[in-house]
Image (tube, rainbow, N blue to C red):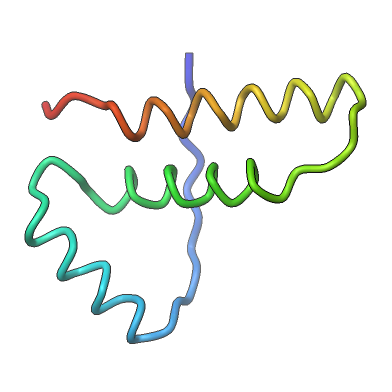
Length: 74
């Protein structure tokens, strides 16, 4: 079971406008889904090390990323 955690972050205005435009043209996506996909992809691309913990974290990030991409609209 996934437990959501709230994050408050400031982003550049240009990025906010781009996100707003994307969400307006992709009604099956919402802000939370975009952030989950973006953050998990960033962590996947920037992971390093081969310890058990980093391996578990990598798999967890991959799962979140794939779930965000293929999530069905409610």
